[in-house]
Length: 271
Length: 174
Figure (cartoon, rainbow over the protein chains, first blue to last red):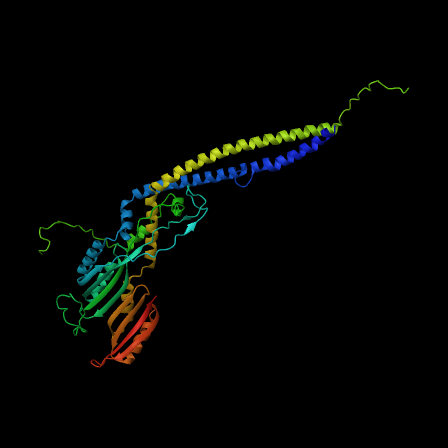
């Protein structure tokens, strides 16, 4: 009788203990409960929907890119993947010659070395399925590297202006890093023609000598990685191509394409 | 002789109070329900775990396809456009340098040299003129030119050979 009397409170106590130690943790324990798994499932579904959306947009954007090869070429000529120093030399030489300038020297240096920076890390925002919550280094998009073309030219003021106009509108981006114009002819070694003596009395003449350092750029190809997969470009299905119109209107002096021509020679030391 | 009562007393069948009966039933029901809920939770948890695995697997496939697909061309185009836009924005035409020089040099002054630094956007001019009065006028001319934001005067000397005043001036382009 006494045992039976104790049964009810014992069962209630057992129910409470079971509820606290077994049932509630099965519902929510912060990591493996039903509620936690449900949240995790929703998060996984959201990630899947996000990557599917980006993938769909990427396909549309890629189709748009393929449908405008000329515009794409304009951009890739403006900021190319490779240095194309031969084209720079050829084009600057042509622009100087068209302006009636005399060229004393023309060389192209190598791009400046990048400063090695510690990789930036990001946590929890990562979409990488292999390490969704761990810290991962963010591969940022490549930045442009500049290199200089050095040029020594001489000619009249009007010829110089004509040349600078051509360089300003050259279809490959460039900027005048330094420019030094001096009255008179150059005394630089290798100078040809009448420019052999030191600056003669040319003050009355309209002859200028210029030393130029023109900066060009090169930009490595960007590749998709965990660091840039969340880029805003994949949020839309239409590419922003306004900059191409801007390039076309401001930089209309199309770059010449260089052709090697005939190659090979029996005696490379003969002129 | 003492009498011994051998009559077996009929055992009284006592009923439990009704609240005790009800309590037992209720407690049993609660226990059974709790166990049922626990079972349900364990089952749901297993289903959810399997579904998470399935969705995660789909996501991994999609992610790999996305990384290996034509999205690389898109991100490269976008990055190149951004860089081009930024370069155009910071570009400064050399035509402006000549325009400003042409519009501010006085007829009685000529330039011996012109040096331009694109990074600092400064122009250094070596000017020649026939007197300090003209030099002063030229400096005022530069100052009044809205294309220059600042002026720093350098050396100013008379050339013994020609008797002309040579002076340098550093101008900051706007």
